[in-house]
Image (cartoon, rainbow, N blue to C red; front, side, top):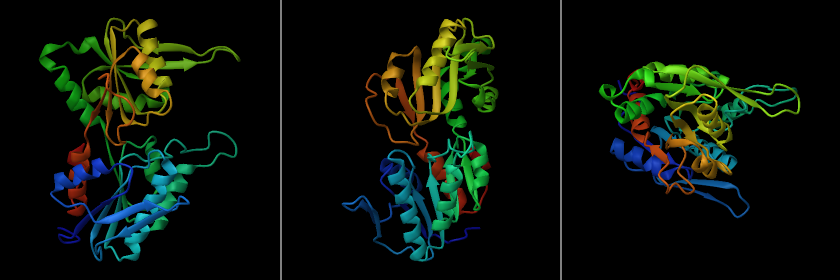
Length: 321
C-alpha cells in the first residue's frame, strides 16, 4: 500500500549533489526544483520552486564538512517543506555528522549527537534514512522512525568478487578491527565473508611512554582486510596497518570504511601507508587527489534509491541487508 500516492519529491542540498542525482536517475524521477544558497553573511537560504503540498518528500543531504553549513541547510530545507504543507518529510543523511559525540567521555562533555537528533526532529522531519552510524545507540536518540542502512553488504559483494571463493583459501585471509571499539562491526563483516577475525589493540603501558600496538589473533603470512565505519585523519588506520605487517607479520593489507571523511593529512598518510587498497562508499563526496588509484569509492546511491522506494511504498527494507 502506498501511503502518499505517486507524489514523490526529491530535493538535495549542496553537500553531495551528484549522489542525489544518481538516486533520482535510479528512481526515474526528476530532481525537485529548488535553490539552496548562502547569503553574504553566511546564512542558509532555501527556496522551493515547485509545490510539495501533500507530497512524500525526501531531502538528501550528508552532514559532512563544512558540517555546520550542511546541517543548517538540511534544517532549513526541512522547515521550508513543513511550512509548504508536505505530506511527509524524510531526511536522507548518508553520512550523519556529530555521530562521534554520542556519550559523555569525561565530565561536562556535551552529547552533540542527541542535540542534532533533536534539532532534526523539531525542524519537522517525520523520519530519517542514514547509513552506518558511528554508534548504533544513536538510533534511539531520535523520537521519529529511523531506517539504518548497512555498508557491509556492498563491501561483501566487492571482496567476494575481487577474491572469488574458488580461488582462495579462507584460512589465508582475516578481517581486522583497527581498535577494540570496532570489534562488533568487524566480527559481523568477517562472518559475512567467511573469514577469521583479528584485533589491533593500542595501549600506553606507562605515562609519557609511546603507545604500543599489539595484534590479537593470527595474521602471520595472511592477507588482512581492515574494516571500520569511518576514516578521518587516517592516523589510527595507517598505524594499525603498519602494526599488522611489522608486529603481526601480515602478507598484505587492504582496508575499507563506509565514510571517507579524509581530513587534513589523510590522503598523504594513506598514500604512504602499507595499505594496498583503500575502499570507501560515496556517502561523502570525493575530494582531494586520488589519482594514484590506491583510494577507491563504491557507489551506494542505488541502495538508497531502493530504500526510498520501500519507504514510500510502506514495505520492509530488510532485504537490503
